[in-house]
Amino acid sequence: MSSPAERTKLDKSGRYQAAKSLLRHKVLSGEIGEGEQLRPELEICRETNLSRTTVRKAIGDLVAEGLLVRFRGRGTFVNIRRSRVQKKQLALMACRHSHVSGAHELLVQGARQAAEDLGYQLAVVDSRNEEEAALRQAMLLNEQKVAGTVVVPPQTISSDAVTDRVVRALVRAGQKVVIADDLSGDDTVPSVSSQNEESMRELTAHLIAKGHRRIAFLTSWRTEAVRERESGFRQAMSEAGLPVRPEYFLEVGGRDPARQGTQEVDVFMAMREPPEAIVCLHDLIAFNVLRRCEERGWRVPQDVAVTGFDDLPGASTAHPPLTTMHQPLKAIGSRAVELLVRQLAGEPIGTVHERLPCRLVVRKSCGS
Image 1 (cartoon, rainbow, N blue to C red):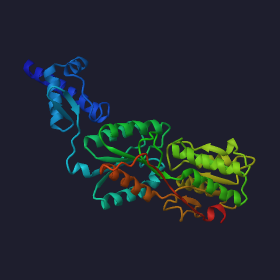
Image 2 (image 1 turned 60 degrees about the vertical axis):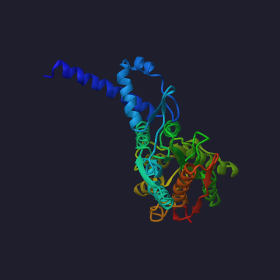
Image 3 (image 1 turned 180 degrees about the vertical axis):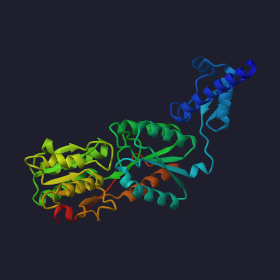
Image 4 (image 1 turned 30 degrees about the horizontal axis):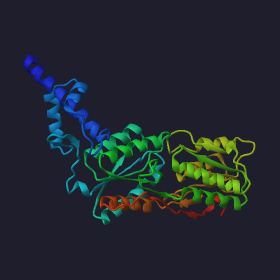
């Protein structure tokens, strides 16, 4: 058993570590932003029920770590000091476990190449498509004093709120941020994405021009990019005087990308009047639809046309080859990094929301 003196020493050490962890969390989470002042030591003491000596020691350690700075007579401020190496370190936060997984490597390739060409290092982190995981990754990047991060929003029901929290934590820790492959909820944060609305409108119009009238749409959680693609589909249908039938407009069930679209094919096939064409939000859903149609004996394109969006590497070798929209994923990653570097160089880029054009790729899955 430990002696009373040893127990007292351990207790003091625990209180000190608790104070240090609390203050570090406030800084790395963006609760106290870059350049902002910490509350006076006495107020922190009252909040934490710790002695002034303990709080002062914790603050001193964070000053030594380069997260805080003290000014005599003025107080303590957040001042994340980055080394010359850290100023050349960028990050890309995406998710390998959502529909982004299919596009992830292409976007990363473009970002890595741009970073290398511009003399920067790029670390890739996985948000796991989970809110708390994304926030933990943001705090970790702040702790590593990364200079700027490209954020690919998660594909979840609360995507907009999660992205806003992640971006806020990064920006308030002094990072530069660019949103990639989606829109930012904050108009002050630059973003790079595809022309989702115009492209989906063109894709749907192509099916209509081929004579299809009963056209279904398989969608997913409502991120801004998803809403844009839905809008493009609805525009094309409206312009052709065609109704968007509720039973044809379905949100895919489940979070497993390997199954999304499968049960929806079963639903369509059970209808008295099934759709003549299925427009999928992205290629991974379309791949599942093609596979399920083959399993159920629903011939593509003879019985039903199928289209995707992304033009992933597997689209041209699918059975049958998939008609889709080629999304410039490498260019999105590259351009996002370029915008980061311009900001880090002190260039005033203003409010930049770039939308890169897509290209219709017609293959056999729609009968062409």
